[in-house]
Length: 412
Image (cartoon, rainbow, N blue to C red; front, side, top):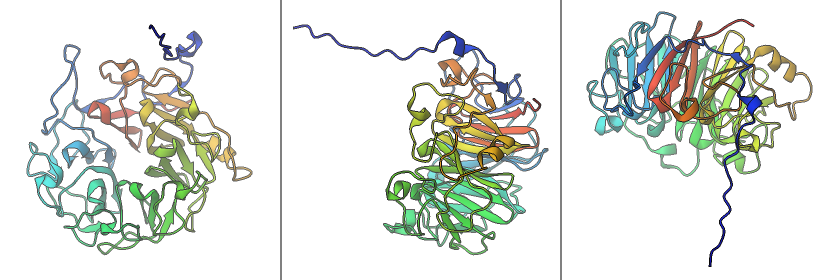
């Protein structure tokens, strides 16, 4: 007996949505410099064996000044790559490596045991005072250098999340979290003396009011959980203005704390700096209210106000820039819109549309490299990280195994 099969086609965009009327957030010429794999038209794929020029799924990068140095978390190769000066040419080789014996080896903890200069899935990276901090996610720790490394395999000075540089168990083998443990910390940020860590697997953000000075030093404040020992997704209940599901990155937009809550497909914004545990945020971007957490607001195609797994956040001038990872695009919101949204009740907020875009030709597209083609200078494929320095956006274009140095397109 023949049984008809009903096939639901993928929705098609109406013709008018293919027109590009939004502001281009970054230069229409695309990235000035591409570091990592550069696939030519005649190539389908390139090997990702480690070298001074080849990366594998980089998830974070940090440009320390307009002229360098630049440090990159080459996540899939379990190492950091460093350029002494701002790279000026495509595929420019790195000057330094930390985490592997040389540029041509890979493996978690250099295929050995954890140490002061090894990594297992390094992700977030940032400057902190005169030094550098790295979220060493699968070692469940953060490594801190008191001074910027200026050579290969400089050992870290401090470790957080673990009591020493050898241990690497999540939450120090406990079934509960604590103020001095971590589980998959993916994001890190330093701002005005405070250190912020997205302790992703514990569904929380940890805050130290001063830069820690001792190994395993406990955090002072927690967001996303009611206390330091809880670690349930969304606090063990329905989503709220205080809860998190998969927090991944942190920044400050003016004086306002911003956290990318990728698992709830939203960006959380606090008005000012929270001072109490589990402080609720004032507004979210990507959702219509604090209760809604569906990908792209439950619609197949994205829009100017929806998000799908936003893993990264950065700030440039008065722009908040969000790495809308699963939509393979960057979205930008202007600061005046945030100010308006914070006037009034701290309950539900309007789903504010973005004011700029990069990586896609319009707000409704979401395909990797726009049309699932080869990477272009102005396309993205699961971009995990966005940080800025001056007018330069440093984009961790993870799915394309590359870092983009791309200029902002300021102006109205």
